[in-house]
Image 1 (cartoon, rainbow, N blue to C red):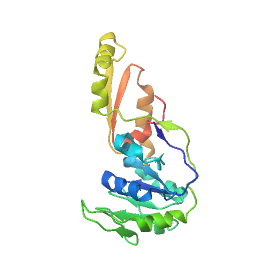
Image 2 (cartoon, rainbow, N blue to C red):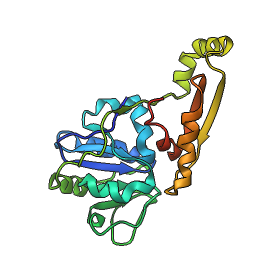
Image 3 (cartoon, helix red, strand yellow):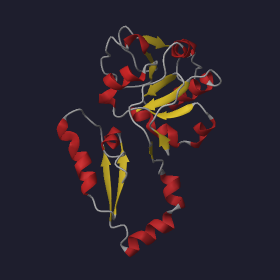
Image 4 (cartoon, one colour):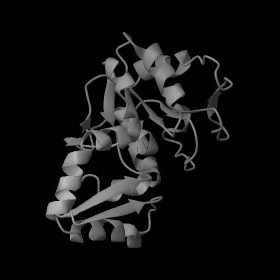
Length: 214
């Protein structure tokens, strides 16, 4: 279960796909009073057991990449982009947007470091301490983490459910998400599937249906 609400501490939001950057950020924020939140495609990081030891790994803030202009503004603290999906930032938070690795944007501070090197996120952390806590935009939890090892652990129950008809079909719903209203077909399709269907998801299209309580 991943919290989608907020705490009362200052925070840093990290987006992208680089789990090593996340690990270094979590190590460097330990004991500082600064929480770390994921955004968009960094959500699956919460399902790796190795990150459970970090008490300041607070949850996931927001939704798919295309909502970042509003969500980064309301987050109030620094943003660290580790890979792609940077939308041209608003002036209201551009000075809080940091990049690293392959990501970059004109006018935004870039944290240097080659793959395998230790990066220094002290400037990001120092800024976070001066910022107010994130503004809460959602509450509750979402469930995930059904990787292959978890599926294999339940394989006998899954097979039995198929044999008895409790599970009649598996549907893969994957891909990117976009701001266009017609993308709602992801949501409508998920709602229309019967209880006997299992949805397998990949990509940020998941934000169209992973909060439906299916």
